[in-house]
Image (cartoon, rainbow, N blue to C red; front, side, top):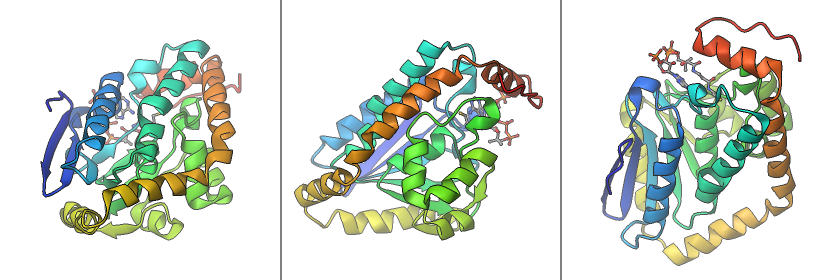
Length: 260
Ligand code: COA
C-alpha cells in the first residue's frame, strides 16, 4: 500500500498507520481523508491485520484539525457536503470497522484531529498531548462527529465547556475526563499501544467484530444528532463570523467576531 501522506507497516497481526504531513501538523486535507479512508478500508478487510494503531508523524501533533486553508472559502452547501462526506468516508466508517483501531495521540489533537481520535475504539495519549475542539473560535462548529462523540465520552457539561470555550485540555485532564484510556511518556506511546494491540490480536476477530457492532448499536438512537451536526456545520459557513474566523487564522491574527 503506497499513500503520499501515510506511512503503513504491519507485523504479527498489528498494523501501524502514521499520518505523515508534519509541516502542517498532520492537518486533514481532502487528500489525507481519502487516503485514510482507502487505507483503513483495505486493512479492515485484510485477514492478516487484527488491530490497527493510528498515530501522527513527529513529536508535536497527532492531527491539528481539518485543513483550514482548504475550506475557508466554502459556501453553506460546500460546508454541509464536507461534513456529510467526512462522516461517511472516514469518521463513522472507523467507528463501524470490525478491526479495532487504537489512536496513539502523540501531540495536538484538535478539531478534526480529536474527532478522528474519538472515532477510534481506544485512545492513548502521550504526556505532551493537548486536545480540544476549537471550531467556534473559527466561526464554525465541530463537523466530523465531535458534538456527539465528545458528549458521549466525557458527558454533556464537560463537552459544553470544551466546545464553547474552544480551549485545549492537557493529557492528564483528558485522562481524568475519560477522554483517553491511558497516558504515557511520548517515547513509550507506541509500545503502550502495541501492548494493548497484542492482547487484542489473541482474541477472536469475529467475536471482536460482533462486539464492536453491539456496542455501537447502543448509539443508534443518536443518528439524528449527527444529521443535526451536518446541517448546522453547513449553516455556519453562511455566517460573516466564519469568514472572519478562517481569514484571521490564515492571516495569523485574532478574529473580531460580530455575531452575524
Ligand atoms: N489547517 C491548516 N494548516 C494548519 C492547521 C490546520 N488545522 N494547523 C496547523 N496548520 C499549519 C500552520 O498554518 C503552519 O503552516 P505554515 O508553517 O505554512 O504557516 C504549520 O501548520 C505549523 O503550525 P503553527 O501554527 O505555526 O504551529 P504553532 O506551534 O505555532 O501552533 C497550533 C500550533 C496547533 C496551536 C496551531 O497550529 C493551531 O491553532 N492550529 C489550528 C487548530 C484548529 O483550529 N483546528 C481546528 C480546525 S477546524
